[in-house]
Image (cartoon, rainbow, N blue to C red; front, side, top):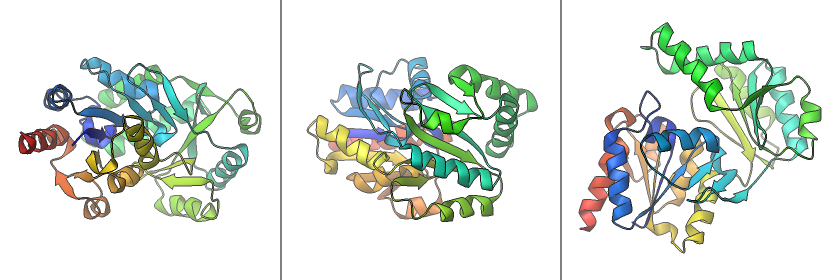
Length: 287
C-alpha cells in the first residue's frame, strides 16, 4: 500500500460532515509510515478543504469527481471542463423534468434562485438525516451558503458560452426516481458526458474524462505509484471507477449494495470510523 484515496461524504466524513478523531489519527499514522493520502470527492475544492483544515490535515484533493486535481501545495495539476453543448443538453433534460440543478464552475456555483436553492437543501437534509431537528437542518443549510460561493442566474445559455467560465460539474436533484431515470435515459447517447450519482436523489454530470478513477490514475502516475499499490475507499456510484481501478477497493458498510458487491473489501460504516479502521488494519498487516 503506497497510496490511499478516500471519498468524503458517506465515507471519510461522519453524519455531521466532520472527520472523526479516529479517522484523522489513522490518516496521520499512514502518512508517518510513508503512505501517500489523497481525497477524491464530488465536492468543490473549497468544500473539501474545510473539513480537512478543521482537523489539521493537509492533503492533495481530487475534487468535482475528478474534474480538478490539486496537489499538496494547492496547485491545480489538471482540470477537465465540460463543453457548452453538453451543458445545454443537461440543462434542457433537467428542465424537462422540472429538476433543480447546480452548476459548478471556476467562478463558483450557479443556481436558479436562492429560495429554490434553500428549499431543495432542506429536502435533501431531511432525506439524508431524518433524525436531525429543524434547527440542525437550518444550521446546515446556512452553512452551505458560507462554504460555497453560490451565485444565481436564469441565463444559462450565456453562462455556458462565457469564455471566462469553465463548467466542471452539474449536480441535479429530484425526489422522483422516475424523473432521475428519464434524465439519464435522455442523455445516454451523449458520449462526452459521464453520469453518476452520490445519493439516491441526485445525478452528477461531468466530462467523460473527469471521473475519479481516471483522476486517481493521473495522480498516482505523478507520484510514480502503480495502481496495484493504491487503496480506495467509497460508498456510491461516483466512487465506482476508482474503487474498480485501485489495487484494493474498499466499500463502506453504508454503501449501496451494488457497490459493495464490486469491491474487494467492506469496512465499517462512515459513522463508525470505517476508513480509519481499515487503514489501521492494513498498516498492521504490513508491519
